Amino acid sequence: MSKPMKLTIASRESRLALWQAEHVKNLIEQFEGKPSVEILGMTTRGDQILDRALSKVGGKGLFIKELEVALLEGHADLAVHSAKDVPMDLEPEFELLGFMKREDPRDAFISSQYASLSELPEGSVVGTSSLRRQAQLLALFPHLKIEALRGNLDTRFGKLDRGEYAAIILAAAGVKRLGLAHRIRDLLPQSQFLPAAGQGALALEIPANRADLQQLLAPLLCPQTTAAVRAERQVSRLLGGSCQVPLAAYAEITTTGSLHLRARVANPQGTEIIYAEASGSSANPEQLGQQVGEELLAKGGKRILALCQSAD
Image (cartoon, rainbow, N blue to C red; front, side):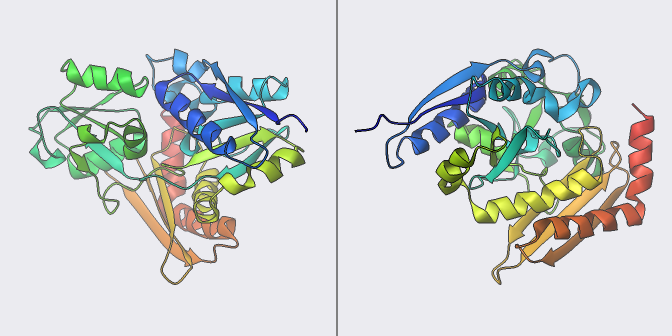
């Protein structure tokens, strides 16, 4: 009788990242042959630098670099990421297999005192780590004061509970995954707060040319989520794919089976937001993302990108 396959998952050490890794571990261990899975917890530069906005210190890649080193050196076989933290283009030594079934993609309003954004008095401090959220907040509620909020979910909740913020905005998916849905006072409508590319989805990354892992992990991937996130990421790729630009992109499969993609790009002050949307085949999501991204650029996105880059 052959021994079970052994796998190691590289994960950040935040409670949410470890939950995500544990979730994947439990699913893999149910596969035929009962693979044995362990988790290698690691601290990334994104976890260490908490006093500056991500857009100022290197962006999304800060959360995955150390995990990729573990893959490259053979200390781990796969890494589990929040899809919105994954850079748009990976080095050739790595492969992004795809995306697991999406959790709630919306943004969540969390406050100890107020039930909704509309209840916040003028000058109230709202915490968020995202320029996308900042721009959409200020477009609707210019009387609010937006301040940076970094750290893991427990750190962010702690700052809220100490009264440093009147409210904070977080991805609903992470809050729900940690069993903290009761802290959500309101789920923000996508018509006003379009999500980030990949928000709510988990991404699986492996070393390139690992056909054995491609085959083994294929059942974990969701074709509908993978198509949607691929379209969203193409918009982000076309518009720079960084944390320096307030960009939103969200796609979903319609009742007719087509893929519908909506996207927005804004200036950080929320005084100008450009919209684009289109439907297309889920068989070629990048083509749809390219179409919507090009429309954003043509409508004025190039000028906004230039302004964001010159402000750094």
